[in-house]
Length: 402
Image (tube, rainbow, N blue to C red; front, side, top):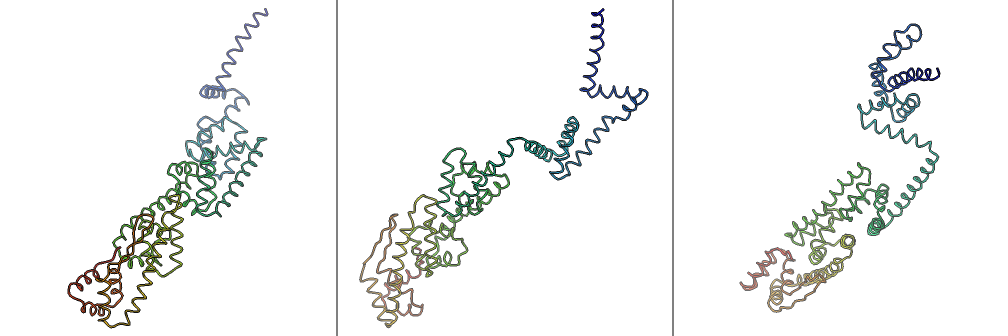
C-alpha cells in the first residue's frame, strides 16, 4: 500500500512541478495558463482576469523606460534601484528596453547604478579616501611643476615618463592640472610616441583639443623655417624692420627665424636694431629654444660675437661719416679712392660654426658712400676716374644680402 501511495504521489507531483517550472520560466506557457485560469469562478478567476497581458506589460515597460531616460542622473538611478528591489525580472525588461531606445544613456545609468551599489561596500570609503589623496598629490605636484622654468618642466616630465610604465598615467593626470600653455609647450618637446600614449590616457575630448592645438603649434615651427627661407632675399636693413621691434611674429617664432638664419646674418640684422631690450630678450629666447630643442646651445655665443663685430663696425662707420661730412666733395673723393684702391686690408673673424665675417676697406668705402644722400654721392663719384666710379656705382646698386 505504501509503495502504491509513493508511486501515486510521484505521478501527481512530477507533472505539477513540471507545469510549475514551465509556468514560471516559459512566458508563452504562463500566458496560455493565465488565459485558461481567468475563467475560474470567484476571486481566483478574478485575480487572473486582472493580470496585465504581455502586450500591456511591454507598453508599460516602454513608457517607464522613456520616463527614466528623460530624468536627470540622480532621479533615474533612484527609480531603477527601487524597481530592482521590487522585481528584478521587470527591472531586466526595463534595462533591455532602455538599451534599445538610447544605448549610450542606458549604459551610463547602469554604470551609475553599479557605482551606487558599490558605495555600500565596507571598502568604498577607504577607496574614496585613497583616490582623494592621489588627486591631492597630483594637484600639489602640478603646482610645483608650474613654477619651474620651461627647461626644468620638460626635464621633470621626461623623467617621470622614464621612471616606469605608470609614468604615462601620472603625466596624463599632471597635464589635467597644468595650464594649457604649459601642457602644449611640454608636449612639443616630447616624442610623437610618448605624446600618443599620454593622449590615450587623457579624457577623449581634452586629448582631441590638445592634439589640434599642438598640431598648430608644431606647424608654427615649420612656418618659421619657411619664413626664414623667404626672408633670405631681403637686405639686413629690410630684415631689421620685418623681424625687428613690432614684428608680426611671436617671440618664439622670431627666435626660430633667427636660429634658422644662422649667427652670422642674425648678428648683422640685430646690429641694425637699436632697441637693446629687444636684442637681449631675443637672444635669451634663442638660447632657451636651442637648449630645449637640441639639448645644448650652439648658437647664442656665435650670435653675440657676430653682433659685437657688426655693432662695432657700425659705430666706427658712423664716426667716420661724421668726420667725412666735414670735408668737401673733392677731399672725400680722394679718401674714398685711397680706401678702395690704396689698401686691400681685411679683417677676418671665424665663428665656432665655421662661418667667417670679413671686414675690408673696400666694403668700408662702399658703406661710407651709402651714408650720403644721392646728390652728394653723385658729386663724389664725379671726381673719380671713370673706371673706379663705374665699379663703385655698380656695387652701390647691388643689394647687400651678406
